[in-house]
Length: 132
Image 1 (cartoon, one colour):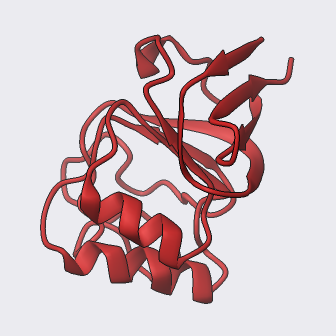
Image 2 (spheres, rainbow, N blue to C red):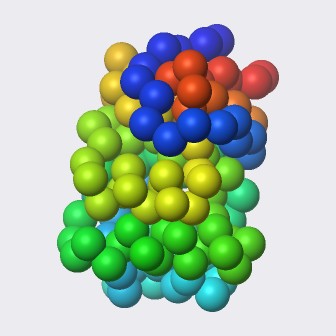
């Protein structure tokens, strides 16, 4: 299955789909040294986003979140790619700085994506391919 969206940050990223039903704050919500979600009460709390195709509605919080995404990339713990329902500036800038492929507006609710299955995001073409 191939879904078409809008490319935000160029490149190709592959990995297992990790679906976050809530917005994510990377500042104090994700540990930049480990890639573990540390935001108390978040549905992904305790999960490692490293190497995943991370799908979540949108980002929240401070502009420092962009630098946390960059730090995750530098530390080898960034997601392989990001999918948002609607990209906003903090996440888009962080993805571009960290060279993390990113798309949004894929035309279906993110909750309809099959968690754990391998996916490929192409930020240059704006496509998401679900590999069964």
